Amino acid sequence: MEFSQEIKREFDQIVARYPQGRQKSGLLPILHRVQEEYGWLSTEAMNAVAGYLQLNPIEVYEVASFYTMFHLRPVGKYVLEVCRTGPCCLVGAETLLQYLQRKLNIGIGETTPDGLFTLKTVECLASCGTGPVLQIGPEYLYHEQLTEQKLDQLIDSLRSKS
Ligand code: FES
Image 1 (cartoon, protein in one colour):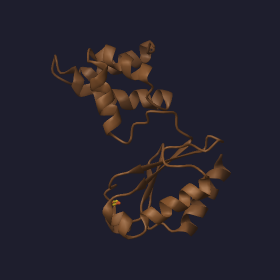
Image 2: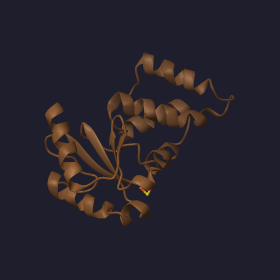
Image 3: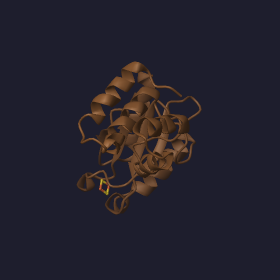
Image 4: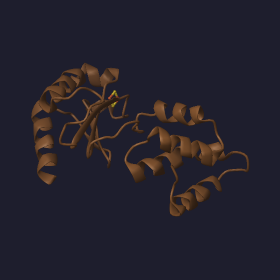
């Protein structure tokens, strides 16, 4: 795959922030830009990034698969990311996660057939005192102290916006 001239210019600007020979330092912002453009990171897109940065493709896959903010398959309009780290689990995150799976009729990592919601789990969102916490992409706004009732309202309001 071939990136547009405009995107390549943006890549050039990103890489120019770093010393010569350290172009790999631009990998994260470049992956963010690619995801912003295409909605997710396909293998072809990651290979193209590797080619641009003169890296082995595996170096790009390693980074993209490490960070949960990168999507390695197509996602829905809203990405629901539930924190499943200890403090949130202590206040009911796992139960709410099961509730969300039943409500949306999808598993973790899946997208509803209407393309509206993708359900993911993430590690600590640094809001442990107000768990259970969910963030919703693409804006990644936090929703805290969640209950089943709050989740119902949230899903209804997102559905009504679409
Ligand atoms: S454990 Fe969930 S926000 Fe920290």
